[in-house]
Length: 385
Ligand SMILES: *Cc1c(COP(=O)(O)O)cnc(C)c1O
Image (cartoon, rainbow, N blue to C red):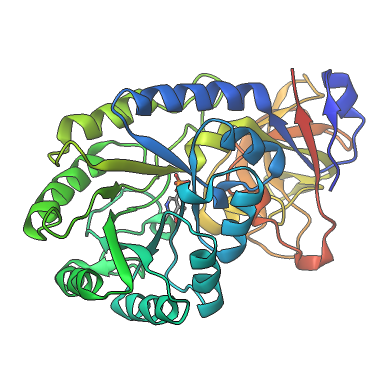
């Protein structure tokens, strides 16, 4: 991996491909907007490290007075290394190892979002052995449909995440009664790439009900973490470069009925970084199939797994050709039939050597890179205008 700080388009056209191109100006604009819209209601954002943990980005994000949302011990350590205050780090995950729990307690993070009674019990055991009290929130699986791809839905009964509604009281009672746990509050995260606000409205109603029916106030809880998932525009990223943070946070403000002293937190990943990154790739070959033209790129699912994993579609544009439009299947070099970026896309006539930009690749692209086929690590170019 190499970092470059370049100014002109022509400078990076000569770079070895594939590489991620990050636009820090857009990142700053996005962060300013997100902070402003959350701040109006006294909400705070924890950046979800798993969306992209490139230090060139996380260093900037941590400078915006945000917390971090982590899903592994290594992410917890990295968040702190990149400038997030440990006291503003939360840690979720259905399968935290003993070592990861110990490390999180050792780092004095804000809260572990626990996903089962067994995890609460283990956390209490580890805390006792360390002679510490562990701050915990119970992650609730609220049974709210997120209307997104099934692989990025997390808040339904059949998903592995969170404590099922019928078992929440038992988990809360355990957390309230254990001398080695401090119950901070409730945690929710219903899914990712959610583009309609309706699921969030349902979530608010669930949260209102639960905060009351579970006697959260008398348990001394003050933290309400509503997760992330705000979607971005993959079809028209230039027009909608910044996610609708205003409508998102305003919807919560309009629908939440919880005590005003609560600390309300959100965990946004994709909507912070997705539009700030593009994957730049060169066309290695074009070839004709039966009724199709393939453009075979030097980037593949190893650099951007989303299309193969979630059948997602990214806008692809040409950086070097303005010939007549043709239809292509843009495919990677990896030995998997799912290694396809997009079928039947219109591109200017493309030949070997042309460069393509795969847009909206700032989130869940670099952080998901695979070594499969013994691929080289892709490059990184950080654009500071
Ligand atoms: C992945 C994740 C997020 C971030 O989701 P986005 O869709 O990127 O906003 C937030 N919270 C938890 C617990 C997660 O696992």
